[in-house]
Image 1 (cartoon, one colour):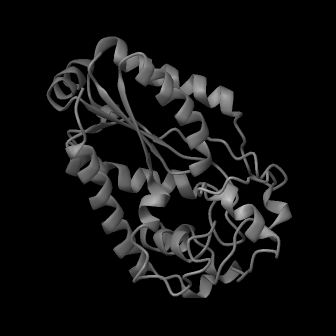
Image 2 (cartoon, rainbow, N blue to C red; image 1 turned 90 degrees about the vertical axis):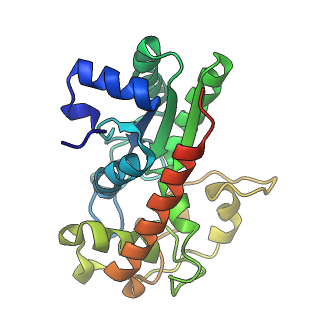
Length: 253
């Protein structure tokens, strides 16, 4: 038995493990279009694969992946499920408080596999911190992006939505769900550079709000021909190690 998977524990088992670990991971994903080659459940599928690996290394309990998220930028694309930020905030808060009611000193780690969910998580974490709890936000794809320097061929757009980085991870984790015969290499539209500061949350004082349709044909960009399962394996290993180390060494309540 995976001793950190809350879904297969009894209530007594969960209580015993949490009292010892005092760490809870809540994985958050999305259901969204990922170009012409990626599965709609890409974030969910990756989360289901790597969360147990992270939890085992970090000695932390983990919950089932919450599959739907904030995908407001992609409302016009078939299959996209968009949950409003305020609804997500309430939902995430409900999950967190359900555990904090029983375990007040619990450290909670919101592990997001879809960066747009961070808006809702930020709201929840600030409120929980104000109440005296110790919440954390960990962005999976940004963690993966930190280890791409010597791996990706496309250093300009390789970390983009559905690009070389994400596609490589998918080819490693769920190759059967990737339709590479349908892939199309794309460059962002010219005005993308102006919007980039908002989308990547850099330190620019300027932000322009838009949708994918304004800067991208479809829902992905980059040179997808460069993606390989071997690159994905390296990136996953590095991100799992970095995230598990952060959780294991983060300050307790």
